Length: 358
Image 1 (cartoon, helix red, strand yellow):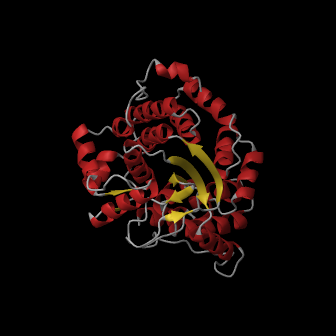
Image 2 (cartoon, rainbow, N blue to C red):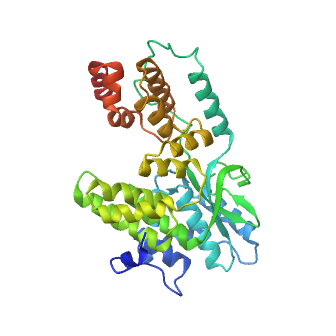
Image 3 (tube, rainbow, N blue to C red):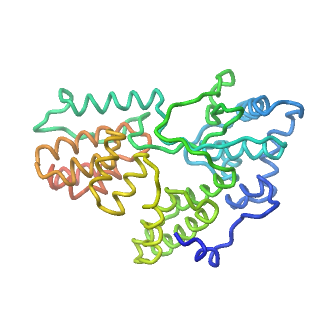
């Protein structure tokens, strides 16, 4: 990506003396009043504590004042209004307050933490693919999402706050007594600055824009460009910029984004999948699945869309559907809608209509 071409178009919030909350506020589009109101949650925490002690007190204040984990909230004003936040928003909130108090926390982006959920997810995938659960010749499809899905089946990137070399989990807001310190094994872990992390606020905002019109897609492109000025190495932003630019025929922007993305040395399954999306090179598709066998996007591409054997494709479509039905990240109805042509080809138009219409 030739970022100098974007700088003339987009005003960045990168300023020499801008405070941590100033950066977070600008990326969120929040007001100073909203920022101060949210900071007041921590106002009673006394000075003189260590960074880790201060973070524990901040977490305690959030819990006692009714804040909860919410996977869609990351902008400062939304955390305040709805009293909840996700890993990005809460890491930025607690990190900004620590920085304002003179501490020097660090930040990491943890891709696909290999936690207890990841292990159970693989177990479910193995049970479905090895047979005995689904009828190979006539597999049934789920009609709706599970009530409380816990699995992922995609390699989420988890922004994390690091204090004294330990990952401080900001999203554990259920129990004051629970220890939020953990050091997870992961597929990939990279160091990011606070400023780079604020850049992801623009990128995540781009994903929440309505992209049913050209105006919506152009707004998403504008937000991704802002994100990339702050953090040029943000692969998620580059890939999404490429997708949006392709959608409206902006070939120059798409080519620049693709070129920059393909330079990445990342071996994470998400990066390999992105390279396949851009290049259609099956080497990247196979490497993504070697890294993460239950990663459903490349799994569906290889074992359903590109699979010539109808029986195999039908069975693997059902495997994917049951995984997605138990995913907290991927929508089952969106899957059926996006892959309607495969659904009709493998299960018939009438079944496709029934599942999509509900």
